[in-house]
Amino acid sequence: SDINSFKLLAIYHSPDRVVVTISKKGKSSVLTKGDEIDGYRLEDATAQEAIFLRDGKSYRIRLIESSKQNRGSSSVKYIDSKEKKIPEKKSDDKGEIVQDESVTVVDRTLLEHYQKNINDIWKNIGITDVKEGEKIKGFKVNFIKRGSDFAKLGLRRGDVIKSINGQEIHDYKSAFDSYRNIDTMDGLSLTIQRGEEEMELEYEIN
Image 1 (spheres, rainbow, N blue to C red):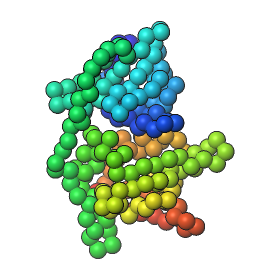
Image 2: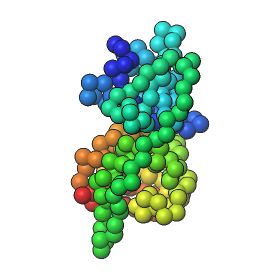
Image 3: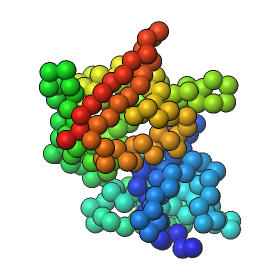
Image 4: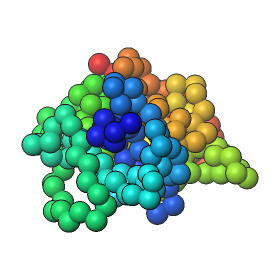
């Protein structure tokens, strides 16, 4: 299989974790570092690219949303190619989060914005996995920007997100699967641990 048939949809990159979402012929796959797809092994990632290894050669796949000229397709280069970083595409109209009596309403265009601009997420919130032994029990919010969309969702620093719509998030793949499908949802529920209390944060999407 030719790596040019892949499209890179999303990247999560931290010092100890790499997760990417790859699409091929309309089918998406979530990969963590060391996973293989069609013989290509995910080695690493930057803010804009995923790095794969196959048969001793390294390849870079660039995020499809990172360039206006490159919209709708991924560019693939050998790892030793020299290139200038292309600024991330921005969107001014990304929807809002409003409180309607006891319900938090999230504009669907806001979700679409963050799906297309994943780096905007990490500018506003930081998370790290919480483990019990080798098993991930949730994801802890270790920083959240005041006044950001994520603060408006009711999340606070120190919260541990344990499940999304009742489904436990026990690894990075399940977290990214939920993130990838969020634009198809009409409602969203997060189970979080806040101190000694477990609570539900519920949202309406329209």
